[in-house]
Amino acid sequence: MRDTVNSLVLHGKKIGLVPTMGALHEGHLSLVRRARSENVVTVVSVFVNPIQFGPSEDFQKYPRDVEGDTKKLAKEEVDILFIPDTIAMYPENFLAHVEVEKLSEKLCGAFRPGHFRGVATIVTKLFNIVKPARAYFGQKDFQQTVIINRMVKDLDMDIDIVVCPTIRERDGLAMSSRNTYLDPGHRAASTVIYRCLKEASELVGSGIINVDHLKRVMKETILSEPAVEAVDYAGVYDPESLDEPSDIKESAVLAVAVKIGGTRLIDNMLVHVEKER
Ligand code: AMP
Image (cartoon, rainbow, N blue to C red; front, side, top):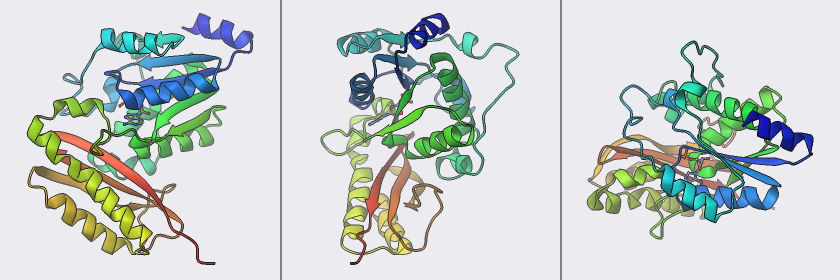
């Protein structure tokens, strides 16, 4: 991979990188298409990164489909598919990690200790190996985009981070490799997440900017679905600091993480407040 990349860089070819954990769906492919349209060479990595999973999380059972992924990426005419071995990425004496403080402890970080340290570390490794000019991430994982943007800025990485819109199923559920865990009943129940976000964004559109009020409505909607086993969070956050404001000033991200049928699902929606003239 390094030899290939070095010769591309030498010939002035700009590389676009799409990091994924595989089991590709239309959400991933939207990133791939965007990368293809903006770069001479597109690299897609498929790597289920063990260090971003907690000990009781789904690393072992995470869906893997290298054959299907390869076919999908060939159809998209991706130039390079990079599938490193776990042992090549994390040899026995591996010690260095990348930590984006504070931002990594909020929202999902509070429920998945070490998760974003694992994400920042693997993304740094992939950046160093692939040497992309641009890298593509989905808004679906909003906190991840905030953390990667901050890492790139703070550590002077010369890479443009492109955040692409969330791709949804027809009924609004954000596409995710983990949706395959849901049985039909839980799949139907999971639409409550999008309903909750849409309802809250409509409230913001109608002029309600008080975060306590919005949070109350979001929690009520989520809890109206009996299949929801836990609400990790459902709230309104500043899109850069991820802090909770008391009122929405200009923009905010409405974000939800819930457990349904043992599966943890996350989603979010950006909202903007019209400024008074
Ligand atoms: P993953 O394979 O889940 O690690 O995701 C790889 C990349 O695809 C990440 O940047 C995700 O944010 C992005 N992604 C996953 N699902 C979606 C989706 N439904 N819409 C847009 N991007 C997505």
